[in-house]
Image 1 (cartoon, helix red, strand yellow):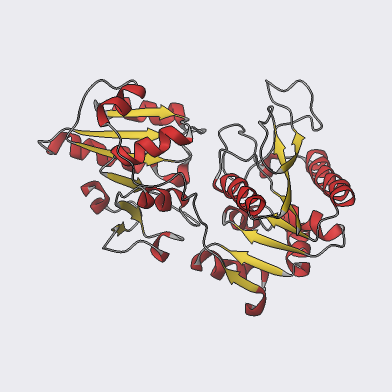
Image 2: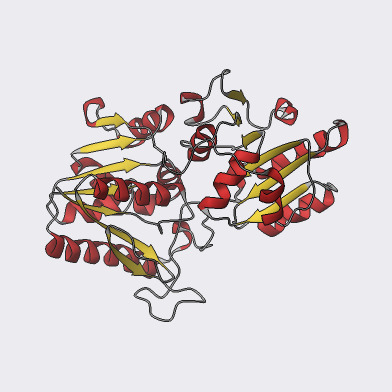
Length: 353
């Protein structure tokens, strides 16, 4: 089968980007022909599937098709632009380029089906081709739908004409039904997967792994966080928890925070204000480093104020460490007392990590 996949974001830096990349790889490996359309603002490395990046402008982009950076719903490590900030011309340019490139690639690639990511502009672009398509709802698109009514006609058109609407958790499924009035028969919950070849229990030297992160000390325990440094991810909650366990526990606990985002500077200021001596921001780390981090940690945290699914929690569990998360979004669908703990958002209990 020939499958054309469309996303609103690059293939790294966001949950849906990683999902798209992994899906395209797996589909290719089992014999399908896959092509992926996605926004970019830098040169991309070759993959086993075909790619059509749409180049957006940022400080490092010389050749671009759109004269502003790619927009996002909340934040992205490589863009601070949001869909809600776009003026009428920028919004029109964005929609036009997504529709044009989707049609061009559909004409050349001749897919049997299109898989659009997010109930936003990509399913609208897919339906303009006249080809059958399905769409996966990732959750942040629901936030966008609530926040900016300008996009409603496009999102609703894309939803109405899709063959199937895939949702990634029970909560996302409920919200999709409420917002878009999509009948039960048309929706299906399909949980996100992870790369089993990468994320698994591994014998990692804690000392050597920490040295690679520039940390030359051996703690009693390690608490980890991986993800965007954005308000909804709740990293500030984790820092306040770290203040308590750094001060009250006799054992030495390191808190390692991996990821980039718009709140990087603000969260570092909070860390300094709280006088956290054993908390480190690692910035963006590679998949290899991420796997090492999971395997040396004693617990992984997901302190999100909202979390449509929680892919990082699945990856951490695959590496054999328990997860402490908030009772939000998709996390209750797969975390129970045997493999972790769920607490209410900003609950003091979270400080007992």
